[in-house]
Amino acid sequence: QWRHLALPMVYKTAEITYGNVATTTRIVSPHSLVDEPVNLKLKTNVSLAIATNCTTHICHLYIRINHLANPFPGLFSIMAFMHQASCCWPHVQKLDLAIKGNFTLTKHINSLATYYAEELLQAAGSLATMMPNVAELSFGDVHPTSIAHVIYGNLAAAHAHRLTLLKSSCPLACSSQFVFTSLTHLDMALSSNSTYQLPLICADTLVHLSLTNVPLDFDWLPFVSPVPQTTVVFGSLKALIINYSNTYIHNNVYTGDEQSRNRLPLCMRKLCFPLIECLSIMAPGTYYPMLDCSEFPWKISSLHLDGSVRLVHQLDKLHIPAIGQLSLNLIFDDSHDISVALSAINEICSRATCTSTVRLEVYNHQDICFSEKSICTYVTELDIKATISSGHVLKIIQTLPHLSKLELAGIQFASGDSS
Image (tube, rainbow, N blue to C red; front, side, top):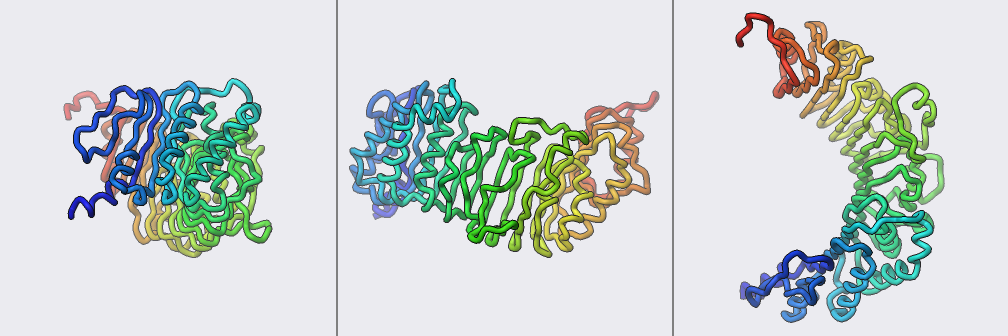
């Protein structure tokens, strides 16, 4: 009886792997999850699910293509096997696809997409037909010049109207003619290469949005509201995570100087987040576009900010009078008055119900001269990259009453100091 109850859980997830398999897998018992490879390059646990009449339990499928010079033969071999086991796939709701290999684009990606148009159409169409109820797609990371970007993009487009979750560790090459109308969870890496940009996405359905490697001049145009308007309203969004890169969409590098910043728009597009609860912004420099063009509610449950200490001077633009849990990870640069910055940090932290972590990184030894006038009550972690004297270490500890972690690159001891 226990076996009858356990089988649905055992075969809930299926996996098909094609590639250079280092070691073969043997069936050590009748209940083993993985078959012997169909050949030296394909292995799966699906055959056992068929043998035990458990195919209706498969709702999550992993497809792996490993270490191939060209992913298409592996993908078509997997699809041929799937056609033979066609009874297994109507119940699949989650699909994870990972393509790992050395196949790179020797031509422009658009030219290569045209060259492989038939293969791309066949692959995306066949997978979508075999698994018509897929609502969650996840794609593994690939080489920046891999054709897998195009395969991922075509597969996502084939499920555009059904997907509720889309996760990708790499940018997708997907036509903007497709509109994702039902996404509630989007987790994706972007690129400064204009070829790998987001397709159109309905902003109103999103509940969780996480974007990494976001160019500083990202214009948010892929996010659309049901009614066209100048302000894009993310009416259902609860969690927003933005991790900026230091590049522009056209591969220009943001250096942080005045000339570099002048090339950026003052406000790209008005964004409104009326129900946001958790907000996390990470930026490498001193420019934080999200703070210049967004409207937030009167209270945020969780706020995490990671970047230059100049970030604290922009927080007033958020108009957030109440913060539930606050986490700051800030870097001091050479041009900032540490006393002014610490005062600003104190002011921001005083508006939070709970301050979990305030971490500071200091690189210039001149910024380490803490004084009694610059006591920062809320700092919990301090990482000093410059070499400082042992006397300064003691002064720092005295001015940071809640300090729980101190990292030092080097300490200079005065002559005669044996401690």
